[in-house]
Length: 161
Image (cartoon, rainbow, N blue to C red; front, side, top):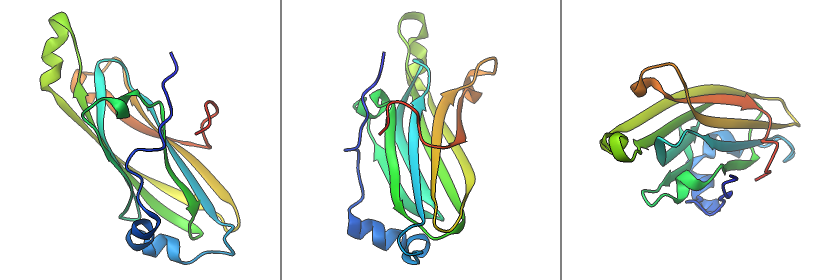
């Protein structure tokens, strides 16, 4: 089952983005140095994504809080696609999942799981660097340790956001 892509989720306005991300975004190399960051929700059915927060060098570039379930249904969320300065940048990801279960697993609804991860994104001058941030469920570990994040170079293959 393919989940819909969402681009409407709490986008920052251009003015807010320029103000919030002044340090990494102000210096541009002829407008050619770019970053494309996409979030992929690959978590199992026992967890519901209710909050997605991503910062670049400490400045927020995407914040989505959704208890209604639409965020969880999105397979891909475009986080950022625009100019950045060349060099190393720190990407910080904070995800909040709620347990989801039926029948004998209904107790999961009372649990909240938080995942925090950072990644150094190195961007060469005059290039476009793509990164996929993926929330997924680890197996063969205790329930509290199952939600996880990894970072994969490149943009998602299909569907393209």
